[in-house]
Image (cartoon, rainbow, N blue to C red; front, top):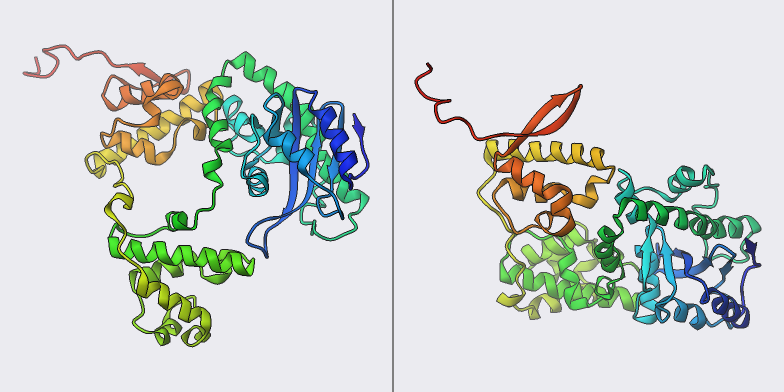
Length: 398
């Protein structure tokens, strides 16, 4: 594999992207800083396939990333390979309003062919290639220039290893026949709606108690206001006000600005500063949340109770057994809250649809409805069918 020098000009970048566009896939990774800014600051992009790889400096004077962004978002003939790529996709979306497509995430794919829940990149490389990744540059300030040769070598390794691992992983997926399992997961990762930053929807990311329209109306207004303040100052939203503080203020709004000094999470300065005045104005103008915007009530069956909780525990045990049997990460199949809903009588669940029903949901439903049970065979737990009891099995004890 040819490793190029750091790309710092548009012409070289365009030439490489043209060559990569002729291949079947391109491995992609980014280095960024987001500790002190509202949007993550893109500091380095690594791209490559089985033949060549390079790091691109987006901070280089005069460089235009458009050839790279076109390859990412407008070329559907080339598969884009990421590992735990959510934040990488977010950066591309922030630059273009589009997401890379088609996309393949090796961390998600590992859940379909092993019991690895969220395997880290270093462990992925170790398991597939037997190579120990140098972690010395993990905490680099990627915005500082010049970058050292070690930093660039470390960064490029992220895509050279991915380019080697992907074909091997693809072969295993084909053998297992589980490629279709991943389609929905990859589409979800590439869905632009996951990355749109609509201030009017920011409140939905904040955990709030209850469904009171007046409280949620204040929370919606406060969250939208905080987004505007953070964008204007270009700082993380938590530097303005933390989520839990916003939720507290929405539930217990202060009557006057001086009361802000009594709110946990705000300093005494809020009692008379300009940002405090702006917050109070937002609270005064907030309107109750319309009924059609209220969050849905969680789908629940009968209260679990002690017996229901035991059934949920049995379902979790079944999940462990099935994950081991078919060598798949349990998280890809379902999660605890869904099992608890199933135990409580809810039936409109993802676990009872599509491939998840075939792989696990069918057995889970039969366990809940008393048609299967646990047995010990050769020292291992396994499922066994439970036939209908004979009519005279329970009666006079003869």
